[in-house]
Amino acid sequence: MKKKEGNQVFGVIGTGRFGLSVAQELLARGKYVIAIDQDQQRLKPLYETDAEVFVISDISRESLMETGIQEADTVIVGIGKDVESSILAALNAIELGVKHVICKVISDDHAKILKKLGAEVVFPEIEIGRRTAIRLCEKLAEDILPLSEEFSIIQIRTPQDLDGKTVKDERIRERYGITLIAVVKDGRANGSIGPDTVLHADEIMVLSGSNKSLDKFQNSIA
Image (cartoon, rainbow, N blue to C red; front, side, top):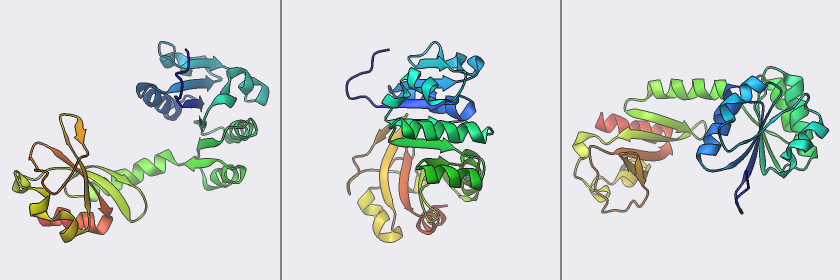
């Protein structure tokens, strides 16, 4: 596969469920992906894609260099349970000059070590659990993206009471302190939102704001 000029290069080390889903989503978005694993079976779903696929026997710097991982703008380490391999993969990627390394972690100690090496860490299971709990507590939200402990982006189906009304009519920002970022209809998003934007019941509203403000808005229209 030839890298498109100006396209970002992503390396994925470890293609279990987490790493594979990251690689597949990046490929779907037209990104250049280098996928690496010690288990050939885990790489099979990527064989018929545009990914550069490598089976390596170890996570040494030499093995990683042979894959060209040092050319990546970002490396995602999807190794979880094998903490030693996870740390070694991150360390070698950083020492090879990769500026942005993101690692899946399974414990606080695992995260602390990787942070000291200069890697960014994610707790996929914890984040999914948190999103699920928050979503269950929301009255109307169809999806939610927590950006911090106090701030989120949510998607809700436009309530029937707002059908045909404009953003100016509802004064969403003034009354609730939240922002209508976009509306989505039939999978197509429109981010050109202004005072005269008309709301429709067959659309999804994408809203951002503090959790308290978003909850206040949902209570008012529930």
